[in-house]
Image (cartoon, rainbow, N blue to C red; front, side):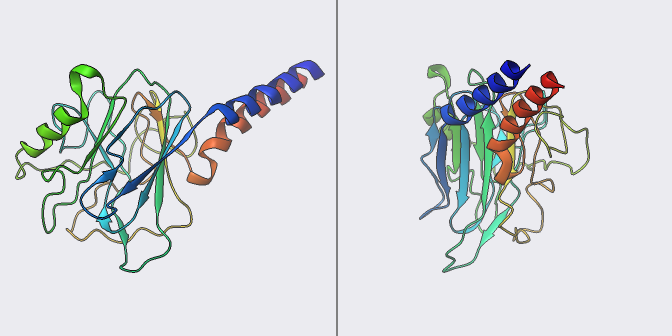
Length: 229
């Protein structure tokens, strides 16, 4: 029995060490994600740090870059994260990649004083050669800025993938909002997403920022304890 417990702990440690943390700056010096695209492996955590003004990280699709993904599952959304001028602490929101074979597409849903997505403020994860980031951004710039952007609901079915996801059906991605940040009200009168934790959608998981990495470790440790008992 001790073997199973030791193996579970070792597996948890290996998973924690192998996962990479990728940093993306949102609105750092303009209407941009920096870098604008990344390549991520299974288990990697992408941490979005909001650096200025009032932006969101909202999931979309390649075909409709400036609208919240609604099918086959609701897209994840950070909600608007306002940053005061001269701030030295910044809100952060993260996603954990579950399925690197599924490309992920994101945009900023802010439309005041200008449509940020229409201006090219988009981001991609694991974009394939036939659907490159450049093509995705071109789609965004060519999109109709007057088209309404659907917003995610705070209601729904828990994904059960990584606590505390509260909406949608988990199929491969998780998100989290830093517990040390306090999101301000959006400036355009609507929320990019009332549920800042988001929901799983096929390539990522959602969870508390301080515990995105630790939830998986705790689950494996729990498995080891169960085998011992």
